[in-house]
Length: 390
Image (tube, rainbow, N blue to C red; front, side, top):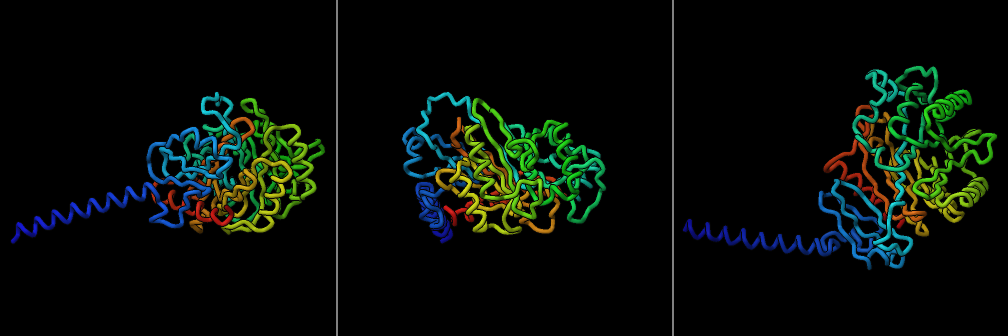
């Protein structure tokens, strides 16, 4: 009797195992069968396990503009969301030596507790300790600097008037941060003197900036020639904006973008906008983003909400409404400890790929790239909230 039971158990295990294998194979062939929320033509592709990168055949690559499909690009890294969009018919045999990668982060706030913890550690690389060489694998790193950097910043752990020790400017350069937008609601926390000190300290350390209107013609446009492609960068603020910060104004944006478009191959705009602690953009954000692209912008980036917001494809251009936080001391909620880093890859003047990497902030200002479930959850949520716009 015992032998019969054992034999029955063995047969059941074999049958059940075969059933599971069949289900797994079916899912690999068509994941929408088990998860209807996934669309086979979905705009966003998600990969949350360590598997080898797919190689697409030429027909897949060259038909992107016609089909509108963005196939999943599988990486040997946990939790990276990617977009694959080819605007032109790019021959796979073409020499892609002119690939340019622009990296953009969420809000960078180097004041308050971040400044305190940095000084306490006696190491100005403290905020960057857990992100390894994140800024070393791109051609230009573009951040929203949400803190005046001043000569005589008083150390404090609270309040809404931010400032950072002057040595933070030197560290930004050491970390390979090339460009900052000063178009935000905290740049003027210490008035024009604080703004001037910030600009001077950035200039002394070779860090460029946008987002400020000065007497210099077209001062809110920064041009950079990378791998034979000329990029133009601009920044605008829509939150408590005061002169000389570049405020969101459609006439100004249209004029600036048209000038930039005449003098550059690619126009990139970073906006400070939206409503704090929300995952969806406002109608105004969407209107301004679409208006920018209608008038010549090639890539629209956003920050301020302290939560990441959707990525949208509009007229074959990418809009990232908010990257969330990157370096910040908002430890009071999970959402404010999360963020997204975007890597925007161009071949010539064509945006061909985007990678979104999750960020999780610890210890009042130290971001890291989370492994496992935490990173997967951030990326899955970014994909989910983006479905409403695509």
